Length: 116
Image 1 (tube, helix red, strand yellow):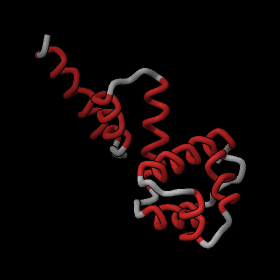
Image 2 (cartoon, one colour):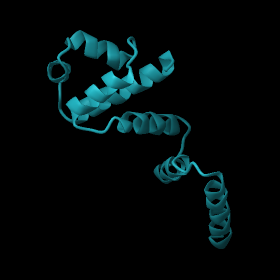
Image 3 (cartoon, rainbow, N blue to C red):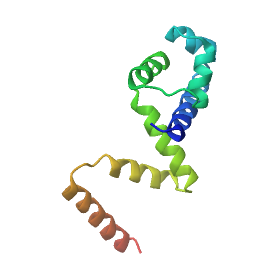
Image 4 (tube, rainbow, N blue to C red):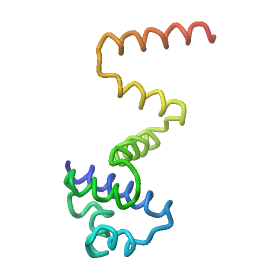
């Protein structure tokens, strides 16, 4: 992960923590680290490895994948996408099969033509 990703993931951690009404001290206590370390993670100063990210997720009671979903949502909001567009793009990114992706795009083209 580069520093930009670290900042985005840190921001996502901070948002989730605040949404849960949890302080940095409480999160740090659940993780067994200092609140200063939590601050560094949230600011993107220190890189989070996958094992530490899983530990953060467990302490917050969420799946680790949510941080990446949040980062994608942050990026899409910066690009001016609507919630519906975000959902479509997120679903599209989950399709790994090339033929299925092409089918999905073709289906959207048909729907767009019919909706005119």
